Amino acid sequence: MSDGRHEGGRDASPDASVDFATFVDLVTLYQAYASALDARQYERWPEFFIDDCVYRLQPRENFDRGLPLATMAFESKGMLKDRVYGIRETLFHDPYYQRHVVGAPLVRAFKPGRIESEANYAVFRTKLDGPSTVFNVGRYLDVVVATAEGLKFASRTVVFDSEMIPNSIIYPI
Amino acid sequence: MSDGRHEGGRDASPDASVDFATFVDLVTLYQAYASALDARQYERWPEFFIDDCVYRLQPRENFDRGLPLATMAFESKGMLKDRVYGIRETLFHDPYYQRHVVGAPLVRAFKPGRIESEANYAVFRTKLDGPSTVFNVGRYLDVVVATAEGLKFASRTVVFDSEMIPNSIIYPI
Amino acid sequence: MSDGRHEGGRDASPDASVDFATFVDLVTLYQAYASALDARQYERWPEFFIDDCVYRLQPRENFDRGLPLATMAFESKGMLKDRVYGIRETLFHDPYYQRHVVGAPLVRAFKPGRIESEANYAVFRTKLDGPSTVFNVGRYLDVVVATAEGLKFASRTVVFDSEMIPNSIIYPI
Image 1 (spheres, each protein chain N blue to C red):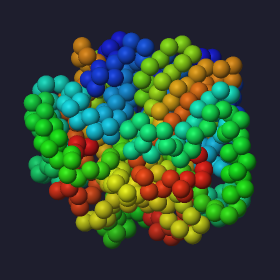
Image 2 (cartoon, chains in turn brown, blue, red):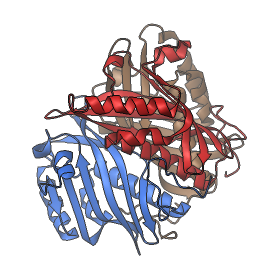
Image 3 (cartoon, each protein chain N blue to C red):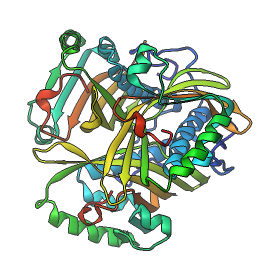
Image 4 (cartoon, rainbow over the protein chains, first blue to last red):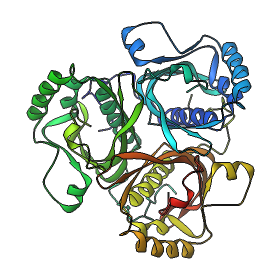
């Protein structure tokens, strides 16, 4: 039972056998990322990435068709930091809370120092004096690498299911 | 701390001490199953089950009362494959996306080669040009067994909370 | 990769290296708690806590500002048991189902016998003959301790995002 990876869905990979510490580190990375965003600590957001990183936020329709159009697309930590500056400007004008509920990561490939993984997520939005509603659901597609400061994202692609909301996405998912 | 299983809620079981590899395999099975369905790769769905399997989808009211009525009830992998054929016919007529967010599995019993586990889930639905909404929430009740191809479901019972939607459930949950 | 905890988001802590058995026990505690509440087994709820415990349910606005006002605040297992008695009285008058979907726990601090952890959650509500809807989303902030009966909550603070629903929260989250 312990040496056979799940193959039923053809997800088997000889690379996919993460050790325990790495698995917990990966879960921690995912949840810490969500926690920082939900706490509106946006200045922490770029620190989850390496310097030479990619962050893309894209509707599923475009992603599945291989279209390059994205709601957000950044190609370095510097660009993420610029975005954070812009976010700070908007925070006081349209206050609402976000809450990420993220599934356990599914490791697609693993070799020491590098993980390809994905996870489903739902983000709920709560406006002042309003109820909590579904804001955005989709999937993270990630490349995670080991650094001296722990695991970080080399690439995070956020593919969301609805095409209705791209213009109103101000904060990273 | 490491030898006492959680007993507060009377979930304790001397059988419930899974090893790390099995735990990660189980998490992977759950997430890979959700990922395949959300990607609309329905032909992969039967491959998450053993040949002699049970899949049931049932409203909570019926399940709690022990009533046999189910929205879907299949008793072999062959029946699952027949269902996939039917699904393929409908895919083009009512296009919408599903997204599963699944909690970590709760292991109720474990012996080598056999796990009884459950997990809560929420499925969100997104129609073209529409927002993402809550479609179906409930609980998976599973019997998972070890095979030469990794962990597979011997039995998956999906118990959903709402009675309103059984007729509109086309795709497996 | 296995010795560096995630530091990107400044969540690093030399205390945070849980062992595998503790991690699975913690995940199990979170999911068993949710499962008991969703099954309406409210008499089991106090048993997830030690005798000298704290349970608080508080809107985020108050929590963030350090205001003491809470929707529920109990300071012993005895008080939780009293609450259960009150819940039993209301169960037949306003029947609805709850369903918790809880993310993986994020361990903030760990030393043998004591864990500080948190997790995001979404609770869905289903009324008879109605659809499932988002009821309450937020974050658990917990202190978990080892006991002879396994892990239990010394403190569970539930911080929810919406201010709209405090009066209608009858059941614990």
